Image (tube, rainbow, N blue to C red; front, top):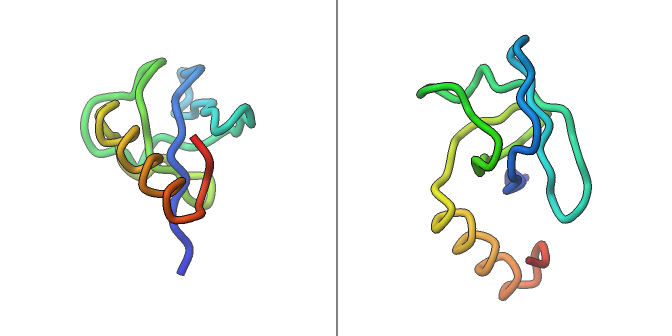
Length: 76
């Protein structure tokens, strides 16, 4: 099973794409999968296969990253 990456939005483009950052690594993603309002710089999202799938609150993102780190996953 592949889990999505937790990343923070650092750039938003007008064409439905955004740049997210995960542990210093940046990636261009499509934001069309996020169902609520447009994402903005500073938002946290779950990314998989080049798509921002879901927006997270900062608390949810930090908790998910903490859990992953404690189980040997991504470092925070």
